[in-house]
Image 1 (tube, rainbow, N blue to C red):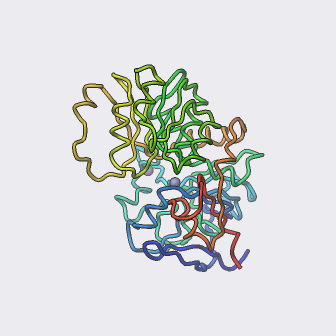
Image 2 (tube, rainbow, N blue to C red):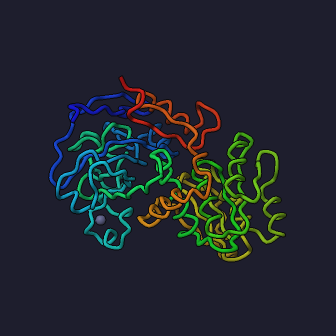
Image 3 (spheres, rainbow, N blue to C red):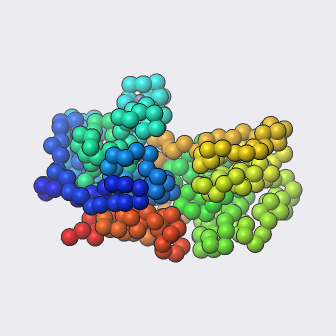
Length: 372
Ligand SMILES: [Zn+2]
Ligand SMILES: [Zn+2]
């Protein structure tokens, strides 16, 4: 095997350097992934601009690749052979706490960098830790015994498999958290990769009305939302979204609001509260706001609205996302709009953040491209 591994390392806020690491010695119960694609999402934009700590980090938490080398104990535990293509979850649970036993390893202390400085989570863990290769913006990634793998079905390309994370979030938030099902009416706010994935999940689950809200800048994405099955799209820059929701639902409002605007302030939450049906609606939110002045708690209580947190994905939602990709029922390849090489990590993250490039939906980082 090659002696050195190239990786893009975040060294400071908004700064990346390509560095070379020695190929790690893989123990019996570990493995190495040859990274094919690392997906980039809005979280990367946030973590790149304002890193939560100073240590050098190889970012990249939505990773697909092939098993390059596996120790015998790893092979026995995971049932994978060298050459198999897998999607690797970014969570690295302890597998003995109550959350891990319940299958909810996303909540495990072992993988929560917010509360545990020694946590392991791909894309968030310092490269100073043993084995160093803890992120997908690298040619290889280290897999410990407790990495969570999913076999990528035959016929699903690495680039398509790179959509597993947003799609599994779509399934988790819309179907599991919000209970979208047959005949549900849904408002999806924000037509980025996350919002479009919610559209697919809702459509597949049988939602009867899917409304997607975006801005004039989102024109191409709103068209893609329609092509993926949205019943109505609304440009909030030119139309009042609440009027559209009321017209479309004959005054009733929607059952479910999914906020995929990530950082658009209080407006989407306030719209969501008004757009929900008079009683018992569900709103899935993402925590971008540290504070919310004049939070409409009275209205939320009177309408018996349930607020749920968008908190990643489960094992099952990843499996369902892979099955959805393999089915080719939706033109999901159209989400994969841009790809960049290892020397363009900075540009790629800024593209997701809307600073450079047009009509970006999903960006793939290809660690074997752009290196000399
Ligand atoms: Zn992500
Ligand atoms: Zn655990």
